[in-house]
Structures are given as structure tokens and as C-alpha cells.
Image (cartoon, rainbow, N blue to C red; front, side, top):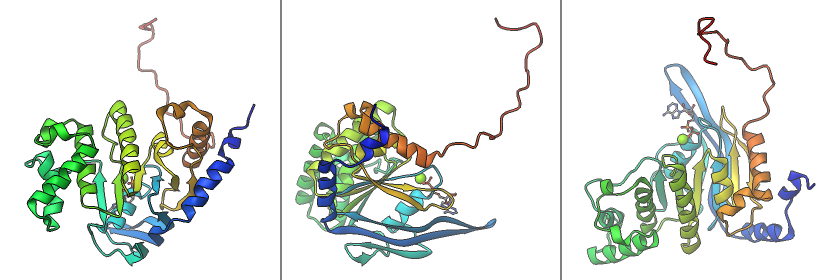
Length: 296
Ligand SMILES: Nc1ncnc2c1ncn2[C@@H]1O[C@H](COP(=O)(O)OP(=O)(O)O)[C@@H](O)[C@H]1O
Ligand SMILES: [Mg+2]
């Protein structure tokens, strides 16, 4: 039998893939990032000393348990919140607020409900100063890319959850960002739609010159999507490891059952859910039935 860890050792093909990736230019450079929140109950360090780099056209997943500071991190990258320490650089320039160089897709549906699909996608283009007819033709191309041409005149309430997120992706990409920041974008979808959305996203990523930073707490999602996985610890959020994903690309759902996928998944599981000491608290077992009224 082959030891599971053997699948995590890089084959020459995988090593060559990452060697090539390391030669690409750095797009996002995060250095010693720290965020401390002040509240009535005192201060709370959400993330501490987080440093990493993302390279051009890379797909990076940030994985960590709930509450470890993933959303705090992505909000800082988006310029929606400010760090208490450290620095974020996009293309060498320090991030000081929101900008069209970053596209955002969140879990909650953020489309304008009073605008059609097409107008939602055109919105940012028009704000950016594109003349109407150009904005419209570009919006149509992005809508076609996410497979929703037949729905361009529908309103968000006429679409399913998965379709709304596809519009959100089209809208984010239409503004021609350098990086797409996604915070658990498929978290509210049912399992089947979610799997479909993951495949769509990989297809889109292959066709567009875009770098993706994707946040998730789902191990399978991270292994399926990522080139590399940044694993965060909780309380405070720190970088545990930045793992090169050896699962061959292009990815397909059949790989879920295969050894390299399962080996990486097991490793991530051990990092995020370390083995329990065995003396965790048990619930007191109190009998709530009357003697003699057993069901059997
Ligand atoms: N605006 C805020 N004020 C105070 N504490 C916050 C704020 N936002 C997040 N936190 C705290 O920071 C920690 C990380 O939160 P968050 O980034 O949302 O985690 P995740 O997205 O990984 O679930 C949590 O303990 C959370 O309660
Ligand atoms: Mg979050």
C-alpha cells in the first residue's frame, strides 16, 4: 500500500508546474498584516503577522475555520477596512481604499434588484466613464461568458441563487480588475449548485486573464479550486501553511475520489481540526423517559 503522504510529494510534473508559477510576477503582496478590533469588552486581535504573495493568474484559496479572520483579511485587501499594522500592495502600490483594480464577490447577493442582469453588469462600466453602447456590448460579452445570455433582460428576483452569483462574477470581471476577491461566494448555495458553480468558476478562470483569491472554510472546495492553499489558524488568524496543491489540472469532479485529492484533504483536515485530547466535555446523559415507556 502507498502511504497517503506519498501523494503529497511532488512529482516532476507538479514541481515543474510550480517552478513556472514562481516565475510569474507578484500581483498581491501582503506583509505582516495585523488587525486588532477595539470593543467595549476590550481589544481582540483578529489577524496577526499575516504575510503572503499571490502571483499573476494564480488561484489561491484561503482556508480556515469560522472566525479565524478570513473576512477581515479580504475586507482589508478590498480596502473596505484598514489594518492596524502591516501593508497590502497590489502591483506594488499600497492599498488605501476600494478601487476598480479589485473585483469583489461576496456570499450575500449584491446585485441591484431594480436593474436587469445587463444593466447590473453595465453599471460599473458606465460609472467608469464608458459610453452606453460600448458598456452594453462589453456587458453582453461577460454575460455570455457566464452562460446567461438568455437572461440578460431578467431582474435578479427572477434568477436562482447560482445564476445571481454568475451575474455577480460577470459584473466584477466587467470592470477589468487585476484580482477577483471572493468571500465564500457559494456558501449559501445547495450542494449541487455549489459544485456546478465551482466548475463554472474554473472554466471562467481559464478563459480570462484574472488572478483569484477565494475564501472558504470548505476543504473539498479549496482542493478542487486552488493552485495554492493558504491555511489560517484561529485566534488570532495566522498563516499556518501555504500549500502547493499537487492535484493535476484541469480539475474534474472525478478527482474527489482519487488518492492525491484525498491525501491533501486529510492533511488539511489534520491542520484545521487537530486530534482531540480525548478529555473533551461529554454532555450529561439524563434519562428523559419514564421507566417502562421504552420505544422498543
Ligand atoms: N467589526 C468588528 N468588530 C469587532 N470584532 C470583529 C469585527 N469584525 C470581525 N470581528 C472579529 O474578528 C474575528 C474574525 O472575524 P471574521 O474575519 O469575520 O472571521 P471569518 O470570516 O474567518 O469567519 C472574529 O472573532 C470576529 O468576531
Ligand atoms: Mg467570513
